[in-house]
Image 1 (cartoon, rainbow, N blue to C red):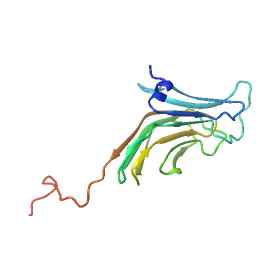
Image 2: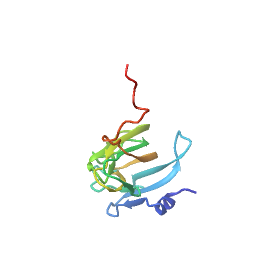
Image 3: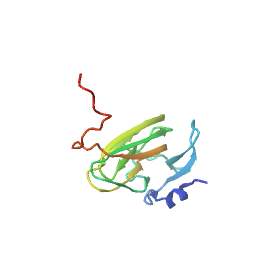
Image 4: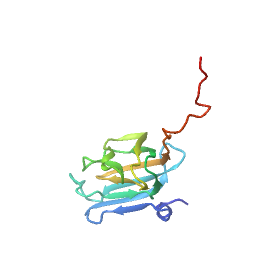
Length: 171
């Protein structure tokens, strides 16, 4: 059975803010609504009999992927699908998908309700090292991610001679 404990053993990390009073948050693996798979669900909600806060100062939950090795010059293709079951409230940031190369400056952000939608990002690895993604829920909401992937592509060597398949006969 795949659950978040299983993902943790694979290097995924979950950080739930202990400072938020009256808000419960967690990350779960569950059946993806309208899909034939399971997905990562992160949520933050007011405790029972607690009002929804107007402002959430500290992100309730953050999930980080295990790092993958990358080489300088590689193009990283990040893709997946996201579903937001209701607008994220209490934060202008909503939910973000950031990485350790560009931080929050290069983060993908969304606050509005949406059914399953594909997301794609491109990044260039500017140095050899490890690359990881961070999903942060900055407010009150319920977000699902499915089929999240990072694929590293090597750029063609501009100094390499073209192969026979690339050459055309003179006309």
